[in-house]
Length: 190
Image (cartoon, rainbow, N blue to C red; front, side):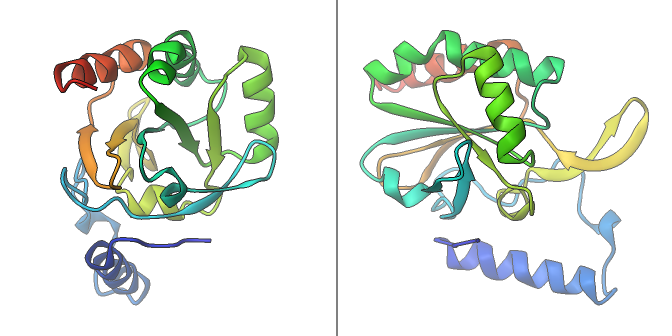
């Protein structure tokens, strides 16, 4: 279920989807690397299922900073490095009252295996319908082993206590993503 807190972003997103659906534009009209959302935009609200099939809604975190990291697939080398990097730094986030959420298109069963295998102490959300990844502009064309295909581009968002996008990391290094986020937050006096 998609709940949108940013009226303008939602209208634009639906407009582009309808144009694509009716053949007015095609997938090549979406520029590689574009993110529709910008820093200081209201973060689109959403509700997704977590590892245990519970609903998690972004607006429930108002009053608290949230790090949302979008990643391609559970248990792949880069995604495992990124998740373990957040796991290994989770105390720093918790000490500063910052929630960490990972989102991919994997289902809850996959998330449960991934969480248990690597002892991940934070929330993973399933976007199997790819609604939220598209809304946040991270479902894009990318090169994978020399082949162009659509998928989730590794991207991290910091959402502030009022629900606005404070920072977007769109060129994420999986193995040091948590440190990059903490370094930024340290510079802004978490």
